[in-house]
Amino acid sequence: QVQLVESGGGLVQAGGSLRLSCAASGTAFSINTMGWYRQAPGKQRELVAAIISSGSTNYADSVKGRFTISRDNAKNTVYLQMNSLKPEDTAVYYCNADGRRLIGIPWNSWGPGTQVTVSS
Image (cartoon, rainbow, N blue to C red; front, side):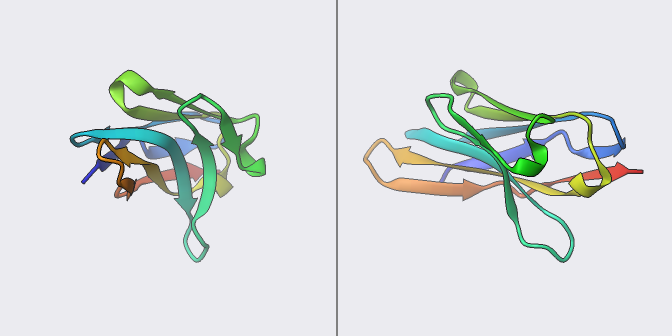
């Protein structure tokens, strides 16, 4: 079992910044994609940003130019730098990652989520 733990959420005023972190832990595994999703009250969970092992990234249109995803492969950690935050960015942010165990079995895990609240 690969576990993900997020940190860095909180309350910030509109225009402010937050940095989320997500660390993966476990034994005998490799990581391919790491990403961030968010779910606002009454809405479906949506992809915010993702990064694969090569460093290629993908962003939701709503966050392009404001959010930056990065990863530290040595630490099995993914980051989401969020700048110019807007009230509509308020949501629970979830880390997701996938990869393979060294015996070849694929895995996919979710973190428990971290609340981000942007006040107007």
